[in-house]
Image: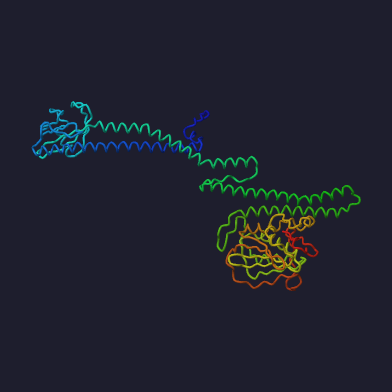
Amino acid sequence: MVRGPRRRRPPGLASWWRRRSLRARLTLTAGAGLAVALAGVAIVLMSALGRTLDRGLDNSARQTGQEVAALVDANRLPNPVPVAAGTAVVQVIDARGRIVAASAGADRLVPLLPAPVAAAAARSQAGVPLDGRPYGLPELLRVAAVPGRRGEIVIAAVSYDAVNDTLVTVSHALLFGTPALLLLMIWVTWLITGSTLRPITALRRGAEQITATGVPRGLPVPEARDEVHSLAVTLNDMLSRLEAAQQRQRQFVSDTAHELRSPIASIRAQLEVALDHPDSQEWGQTARDVLADTMRLARLAEDLLVLARLEERAGRPHGPGQGGPAPAPGLPGTVDMAELAAGTAGRYPQARVPVYASAPQPCPVAGDSEALRRMLVNLIDNAVRYARRRVTVAARPEGGSVLVTVTDDGPGIAAGDTERAFERFTTLDGARARRDGDAGGAGLGLAIVRATAHAHGGTAWLEDARPGLRATVRLPLASPPAEPAAPAEPAGPPGDDPASGPPAEPPPARHRADAPAGPPAGTPAERLA
């Protein structure tokens, strides 16, 4: 059976409601609630007022009946029966329902209430509404019955017109006043809602300006300390972070372009000279120079990729585990920083200054051994480049953390530059010109160090070693330290220990420090991050 196309249902109340503005929905909801509340109040008021007025009439009629019953019991009842002001008529009937006495104007043949009804009303002491027109009385009545001692029943009736007029007047006032009050309250609700939502409108307009200009700026913050104020403060904090990130991105792009321009320009110049003068060109030297610039580009690209991955990993949460934070996703397992420090230091047999290791006991951390090794290599490369006589690598547990330090005895850097040194492509006091001709790095080494520490739940900083500079990395301890091992012998220059065996192989090209062969730079301003 082939089915035809399904017909779209016309939009209903729910669709119409969703299309309304927040202000309109709040006002309509408040108006509906107020309408129900006012209607309920009006009904309760009318009901309570009617019962109160009926009770007052019943008490008045009963009091008149009691006075007449007292006269009947004392056998002093006059004829006609006297009535108090406000009482319409009074009848006295005997046990058989015959009228034995009545007030002036009352019917003397037909009682207002039959004998059984009058006896029940006398026992319950409740008033009975009655239409007086069948009895020759042109008004509504409220009738009460009072028993006598000798079986007589006094029936007293009072006019209901005053109560009825009062109820009609009040009902008319409620009928016209309640809608007017409802409309007034809806209008006030509309104004209050608009005033409450005005800061949100200001936030929206500020966001539209930011979208139009593309420049993050502060959003207006309302004076009231309410949820909108908290929202504005949070959004401004987010915009400040976005602006800072945008500024860092622009600076990063500028620095990257500068770093890429130098080797690319060198490669282009060498190739152009070689093509213009092919006969006098030493092609072997040209190939080596171009390869060096190409390797510099490769190292820069690899460092940027590593830094991006580390910063992405650092944004992932670290859950608590036994003995410290658990490794973040992507961190394989536990690494002994003492063993890693000693092994990495031993891979510098050809360095211009000796590299020593001091790791007396195991220092387990949760992390990626390759990333941590790169972190140590970057620190040692930087220290070897500026050390005068020696570099010391140390690792030790301290409380619930592991401290890894790399110390050199070089010139150090100014105290105000210790944090700036961790920024990407950092230039310290004119070091840019020197770095353009230095193949040692692009200023990403310490940035990678700190990003690695953050990715492993730790931190990194620089401090004065007097003399020299000390780079310190603090990482969470993976578990309580095991039994202390025998102190490791310092890893000194090759050849000092005959039993040490052949020197370790140098690290791969991406880990090697391009340390200068000559003496280190002599001024603190030339230290590079």
